Image (cartoon, rainbow, N blue to C red; front, side, top):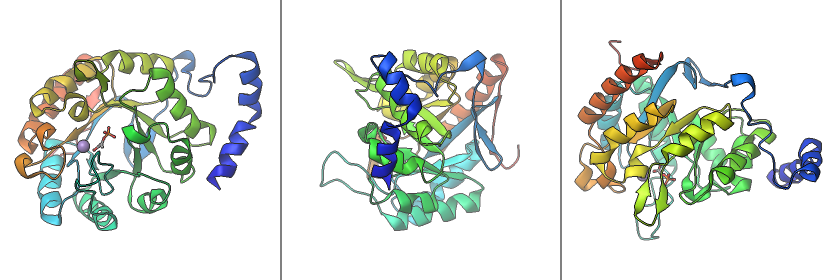
Length: 298
Ligand code: PEP
Ligand code: MN
């Protein structure tokens, strides 16, 4: 089915016509015309509108106890979306690979109990349908940022997609990856700048946030956790991303980072997340926006 869709996409009259007149695939459907911006709606949650949003949670779902503890803190801090990987694309085959469907089930149940939405990653064609059954938003990770069949398969589920930029992708490559989803009829794509590799280490590409915002109408969020790779950088990187115009952030949280099964060094506590959210709310006021706090008391 996806192969057929891709073949159809190759024969798409708009793209075929434009291909003849331009040397590269145009970012046609992505272009922000007359300042028009699109929003992605998940129930009452609107991403890309006047409200800044926070997605937060563990890198990996490790156990029910771990996720319950973190989800409570994430909700209390004001996040509206629970993040957490159940299918983990790990650099080493010996590293924790995620809880699989049990992790997805925990994400759905615990997010529902806390009034949070779910974003979680699909890592391959064999699990995209499974992820779509549990998630509100399908994450396409950095390693798969140019896996066009996976992007197409995720797009045709109709679920919103969080599309990470590859850590070595150009802005052009990243936006063209989003174009695949749009060209297949799914407009609900959120771009995510997650840091790029440079000779001096991984850095948050603030330029890319600004440029993507100018060149497309899509919502864009930043991932200061993977960009910074160190918990002490997350707060300031978040504020830099918001200053650059990001519509929100996705942040890794762990209450016992030294015991985390993945990415412990970049995880912040729920308490720190609450301070980060407070500063996002203050910055929102300066730029005429608001913070979409998910806190029960707000
Ligand atoms: C993640 O979100 O945990 C993750 C693996 O991110 P990335 O694909 O950006 O490395
Ligand atoms: Mn991670």
